[in-house]
Amino acid sequence: MSFDHVFWAVDKANNAAQMNGLEGFDDDYMINSGRPVAPNPENPPKSEFPDNTTLHWDRSFPKDTIMTDTLENTNGFIVVSSKTKEFLTDYGIPNVELLPVTVFNHRKRAVKTPYYIIHPVPAIDLLDIEACDVKWRRPNKAIKEMANFVLDAEKMIELPPIFRLGLMTGYLLVHRKLAAAMDAHGLVGNGWVEPKSLEGEWLQASLSYRRVE
Image 1 (cartoon, rainbow, N blue to C red):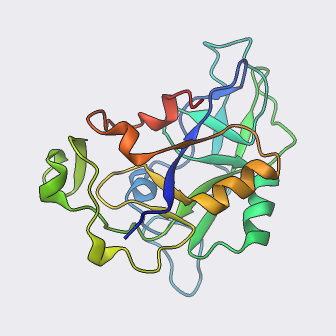
Image 2 (image 1 turned 90 degrees about the horizontal axis):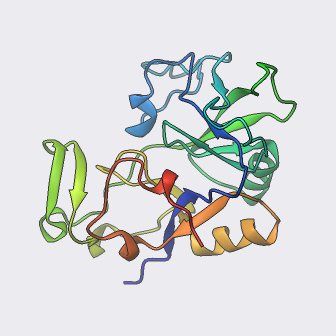
């Protein structure tokens, strides 16, 4: 069975703004593990994402001031502009929480454009662990490295357009058709990475710091 998804990364364009870590939400592990955090009166999450969460431009890069549609950040989250959020909403993306964050520039002023963390829930387990030959960050909970990217064909049924890969915290996959549509829509800052291209170098947040040509 063919696999029609690519990993969603940040394309580090010249002088694109770079973010520090998320502030105002201490349980960011909930996001990486694919657990719901959006406010929900009917089924309150274990840890609720607040409406005053922020990201700040990294002062180590004073000349990086261009706001793209996907922002690099030290958490490795996929943080997108309102333009991207509206496109995905119109496209029809199931089971994805859009978590609002306020971005502050070098002058500590909030930028006008709203931004959102893309948070698909729950994470989907697709890996053939034995064939992948993994090294564990936490036994049977999070992968640190893998030698091969091998999927279990029996688990690859009706995959959504965007989802988080189980056991590989922080990694989002996007269907190729959706990735192409986002590019055609003029969304800037996205980089699409072929899964096979990263065999042998799977490290936490490696996608967020990889220039994608």
